[in-house]
Image (cartoon, rainbow, N blue to C red):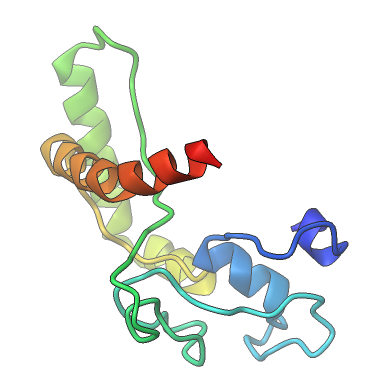
Length: 138
């Protein structure tokens, strides 16, 4: 954010939560004093907190990407510990206080267990790898 707000770079990528923090008032309205402008959202659908921002797909680009919060454990962590942590996270996400926190911070709940996360990461790599290879060549 500092590089973009300070006019040191032309574009930046942020999570929806960060974008809301940087461009909205505490009441959720567009902040006319924000030094940055939101151009496009990388989710599959427009985000409820920034509904005026189009998606890449709406602009004709077959692209989506989510800035997720993923938890990892060291190799060799006992399965019992992994399962217990996953259960704790799943239960926490069901609470009213967590739902309120997520909504207030422009975060969406999309809980994945370890096998679901593995599939998600494989899919993500399939989408990102070609872009990364092209970027490396420049």
